[in-house]
Length: 625
Image (cartoon, rainbow, N blue to C red; front, side, top):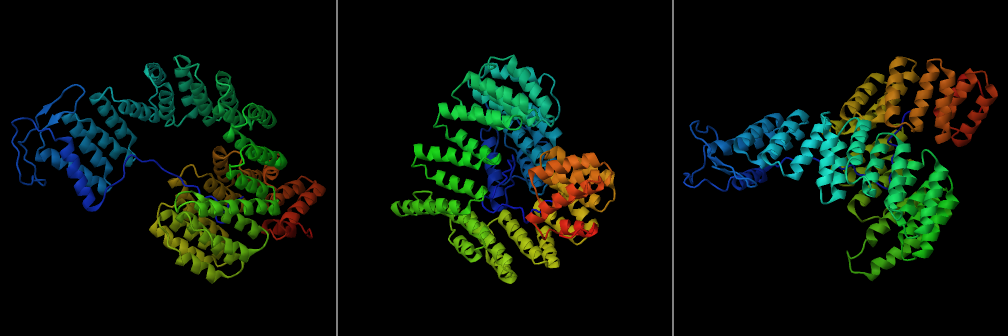
């Protein structure tokens, strides 16, 4: 099954993916100023007796006969004569980087670092290599940096991390053990070890290395060490070992809320009731463990125990009545339980409290403005689900703080107008709202796509997305939505082109593998390839109901009915949608179990009587709704 990001996108909380980078290019005049500043700082100590010139150095053609006099002192920066040759190479590297030639920039500075012995130049070369995605060059630069500054903790950590990322793990466990034993701040050293191993592509090997390093070190009895092992085991897909390590940590420090939270989080997959019972026992002993209790409420909600979840938060509210955020959490839980009137009562109370806070404090002295925006957005969602679209639109008009919330609220207003069939008004809202950054601009384009798709104005949607794709060529979201539009128009060639581009940009984008695999399976073509694509998606997201549905469908196309029924049943249990009901019913029908097929189709119709997949399936089998 496809995941339609346009209609499955949350508008209450907009998550931001923050990508950490070593290098950010400097532009314009600031770049030149920064370059001369770097040069003057790096070689400010001119060797005594060296001749200097007040004139501008000849950067275009440095004098070949000119040499740099370098004096090294342990623990100190080198003394280097700032010649035109040195300055020229610094500037050449920075300009090359500005133009995207990171390999040339890194190579130039790495050679200079080896000549001058300046660790800052080696570090800058490392940054350029990383910016260009050149792991081999980055590792070479990190080792040069480490040779120059063998006691620099950052240099040591970077060299270990890049070596691990490159698969050079020989002796890594012993090196980490040595660092753990020598560190005065053990917790920081453990975190550094985890950061080093996190770069390794093989998570199981990373866990084994960390386990070996910790088991032979002086930190093996620390709770922080066991928690690090728990996290690494979970990342490696071994949730049982993760729970075991978390329980050991809790045994070492019975008051550790962090350990109790991991026992709950990692244990929920293997033994949900057992994990919840352990969390409840911890909460009973330490009733002020707020984060653990909120996580417990969330897990109870996920398990369908809404009464238990509400009771947990209500207990917290009685103990800490000044914790106004608990009202908002109670409203969220009530929304999830489809108790919309109850949720609205909590929100009305929450909004009233936040208004009082805003009035009683000087402007900007509280977070009441942002809290009010959250309240209005959630209440708008309730009103929208109740069919009170104009009231929902009005609540969103009250959202002003922060600017990102305001922008998201305006986009949601456009969606509401689209639901009302007021398409041109919806597009006018989108086009008149100024986007402050690329992320907001993407949201505007994707919202317009959602509105136009809902009105079946697919050509207009494609035109908007195509224009945006030309401006922001690396936007995974735009390309994915373009692919979905072309698939809807039955243009598999164009859909596949954009899905392949998404996979190239983001090899971990499970829904793109799934979408392409499902598109092939649904057309009953290239079935082995479809299965391979969907299998890759399942590796990334093994519990996703849409991907389980796709695997069930391709198994059905391949004639493996028992496997198809198994995958589709798992998908339907996780998310009982009409599309999945259509597929599962067809498998039952093919197996000769027509009564079971009719029963599951009726369930699907009760949930969505207009679902095109289900309606088409019933027509093909001559079954009347």
